[in-house]
Image (cartoon, rainbow, N blue to C red; front, side, top):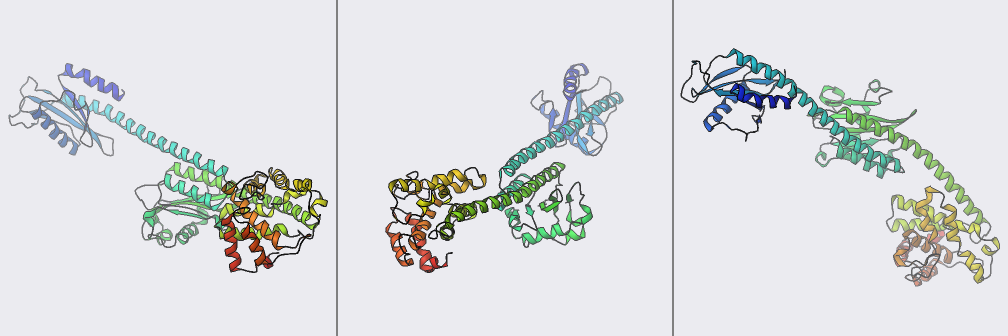
Length: 503
């Protein structure tokens, strides 16, 4: 009988048996009928609550009388491990003589039929109650599994889209920490330590010695034979149960470590640490960590291939640049010098990480489009005609077209395409003005001008650093970005031999 059917049965039974039925939970709250339905008169209600309190403390059937008017009986509901609640029945006193009093207190009596009947009802209730609790637990587990699945999808979408970096990994580890029951999360890679990621919740600050050292010791104490080659994980739910882990921290903690490995290549560990000993690691959390470790291992393996391929492509393109410059002794080494000055400017202007890398490649490759310019124009010692200069002006767009198919260089293309724009909007190819010109292009423009006025050309001798800086200051705000020019002034003030130090 379903719990709802039982409640309907008890409701329909009441007028036949002349008894009312109540079900109370272990917290002392009436759950059937609803408290607002057919409440008994106040004195009887108080007596029922006291009677429920007595039954909640005992594991036996009890019955009695109240005010010599009402018959009360009930018994506790249990699940074999503890009390679930109380089942109570009450109604008018039977016609046959039974003991009682008029003091408002229940008294003992005897009704074997009622005891047997309530016992049967209790068995049904207990079975349904247990089923309800199991369903609730299952619902909670499914809800958590759904949350785990949602987070897994969220994180793996980032993993698939990322070109592996420590910054991106820290974001992934932070997502883990925010969504799982842990106080700290980490990723440790012995051979690629620049990818290490350590994230700790604020309340742990000061409780750990050096975080990296603590996590390394955790990994170091994992027994070699404890990690299955198939499962690739290690769990300890109470550090006090293992002497080697207990000595690592005075407070008890939980630790879950999962290997990050691909094929026969071992990269490192993904881990969780928690000081909440009221919980244990769930199977869902373990499965999530194992899946994420597998995803990370593939990304790391592919990253190595990606970096090798990227370097191969870059070296090949650089070789083409050097081949072009080798045809003209006056421009030989120009791209290397522009790149070196650009990187000094980038550092001075605070570029870091991916932005710094994009500047490196766009500066070294900024003239790659000259591949399509005839040699006689590139090597011409006399002034160019308008038609020849128009051909020269095509080289930024040609460079963009040549490199556009290379996804690895996507972020470097704006610097290449726009390095001949002018700050006043009179440059080419787009006629962009001011800050609408990509920042890397503005940096390269200053470095390119610096090298042009400081190096020997077929049509003139080299200028000194001092004279070169005078020329550059004169075009700040018109041809060149004054902010970048100011950065160059600071650099040359500190290092007057900047040009002489370039290749």
